[in-house]
Structures are given as structure tokens and as C-alpha cells.
Image (cartoon, rainbow, N blue to C red):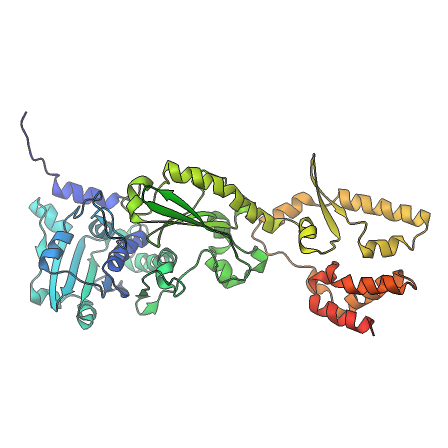
Length: 490
């Protein structure tokens, strides 16, 4: 048996690898991974569609010398099976080259370390003409002629990845101006979400970074709306696998009606609020996959408020089948078994946000106008016949009028628009609250009518005033109710 070194054909392989599946936003995110792994604190994205269209990602990380740069420019510069440092966001040793060349035909990397600059370039046209893996090393003069290199030099250290001949951005857009302009809008949105834990000051255990695009800061987008007072943060659950821990942190977002326009945008927009339910998987605090239940649950309208943060380390990459783009993965069996146990409890919390308040009558101590009754045949809603408003009316009716009143109540209950209510609550349309129309005068008048129904019984009137704040609709207006009670007690 003979051995033959059979290297891949350089032009064919480099052109084929351009179709791995990177989008503009995922390609730039891959480069930012490298910057964070290099301990960068400030990352700048500069781009221009005019004259010589170009995109540059510049950081103030540790930088590379000549030898380190040449090694980094090699395709497959690191074995994915070799253990990486705990904060390393890389994986295959392909990201910088594959991501960059998926968007451009000329990739130049300039790096500064110990005050010295080194630069290397992959040019697909040169590879095509030489039929070899021809890496170009730039001279000192050529480095200083590059765009944006002054930003790198002013920092004194770090790395700049420069893209030129952006042929892929023109496809489907007609012009590079349109392609780069619309593309960078997507990039900003993508980076704000994917790196939100690095951009947020709330994450004390993450290395915080500053990220700017053409001098405009990128602000973090928190998919869990953790600062909203109505967001429910459920207890975290650790899953131990091999020598690592996968931490599962469930959240239940507030109902759509409690969100302002900015918060709706942060939650993914009106359509995204439904589509982006599910697991949010973070690898070393970097979001790599989101908006899926991994087939462990169905995407339902009434579970769209459930979002689950799953934290894993790079030590478990081999179990999660992470792809080259770090954008697709699937949990291993040990993790799936635990997630399946957790997911139904989490989804039920989202459903409860949509559940009618009457179900919680015994929990919050309030006396509700509607009762939610769960029987063998299903769930139905009935008017609470024991509510003081109802009894104040029925006590004044004679037998004939009472029969007519009950006859009215029954069709009201039977015709309760359950299907329409379900559709409306499950939709992203803001529900108009009827309570906002109730004035202090109207509530005061209702309270006086209830007192009148007590007749001359002072003890009953006193008990009614003491418990008025627990009765609907008074329970929804505690401040107004206190004023009314104080006035009626005089």
C-alpha cells in the first residue's frame, strides 16, 4: 500500500467554501468572536460603499506577531478537538477565513503586537491564477496605505480584518450601495442580540465590550426583558453533563398589552414575539441559537411568552454538534431528557399569563365577577352569583323579576365568546382595557348602591367597606377605592 499526499485543489476549494452558508451578519459576528477571544474591549466596524467599497472590523485585543498571523491565516489553524480556553469563542480554526471570503474576494488582516504591525492577505483571484494556496505578506509601506489602519495604529495593539471586492453584497440588490446599506441594518440588529450579554453592564461575570458601527454605538437587545417589572424569572435548573454544567434559566415575558412600543421591538417585534419563543442557547455567554423548542414542545400562541436561557461552555461543543458558523446546534440526549422535563412547566407559566383572572381568585383573595370552572367536560365561565354587585340586585327583585334576571344571566354565560377571546388574546393585537373608562364618580356611585343594598344593617355595611378593595372592579383601583372608603366611613 502506497501513501500519497493529496492536497485539495486551492481555487476549487476556496470558491466552494464561500457557499458554506454565512450571511453578512453571521460572518461579522464570527469575526467579533475572535476579537472577544483576544480580550478586546473596544471593537469598531467601519464600512463604506463608495469608491473602494470596504468593510473593516477593528479591535484593541492582544494582537499577533508575524508568525502568529501567518498561522491564523491557515485554513483549519486549530484542531476543533483540542481543548480551548474557557473564554475562547472559536471552534474550528476556519471562522475568520471562511466567514470573510464568503462576503469578499480579498481578505486582508493587519495585526499589531509589541508596537509592530504585520499583515497578510488572501486574494481569490491570485489563488485562481497561481493554482496554489498563495498567501500574500504585505510590506510596511503597503500596510500604511490601507484604509482604517490609522485607527489600529492609534490603539497601539489589536487586529483589523479588512474586506474588499465585496462581490456577494451586490447579488440580488443591484448595487453595492443598496446591498451594504440594507445589510448593515441587519448586522446591527443581529449583533445587538447575539452579543447582548457582552454589551450589557448587567452581566458582571462577562467581559464587557464596546461595539460601534461607523461611530454609532450598538446597544444590547435583551430578549428576556429582564428589567421589565412584569417579567417572571423562574428558578434556574442546572443540568450536569460530563464535567460541565448546563444552566437552564426560564423567563416568562409580560403580556403584550403591558409592553410599550420599544419593549415590543426588543422582544422581537409583533411577529417575532411569537416566532422567537423557545430556547436561547449561549456558548460562553454568546448567543448561538434561538427561537426553537428543539421539537421538545410545539410553538403555540399561548406559549409565545416563554423564553429559556440555556448556558453551555465550549467544553461541550462535541456533544451539541455545533456547526462551522456557530449558528446551528442540537442538544445531546442527556440535555434533551432534562429539558423535556422542564419545558412543560415553563410553557404552562406562559399560558397562565393568558388565563382569566377568575382562576386566581383563591390565590389573590379577590372576589371576582367571573368564575372559571374546570370540569370533566372542559372549562367554562360563569358569572359569580355571590358577588355583592349581583346579590345587591337579586335581593331587591321579586320572584318574577328574579326569574327574568336569571334568564338573562344564562344566555350571557352560554354565549361567552371563548373562541374570539382566545384568538384576540393569542394575537399580537393590543387589547383595549375596559377598566380605563371607569371614573372615580362611577366607582363611588357603585359603592353607594352596594351600601344601600345592606339596608340599615351597620355591621354589614362596615364589613362591606372593609372588604371593598377585594371586590372587582374596586380591586383594580386600590388608590381610588381608599378615597371612596374614607369618604363613606365619615
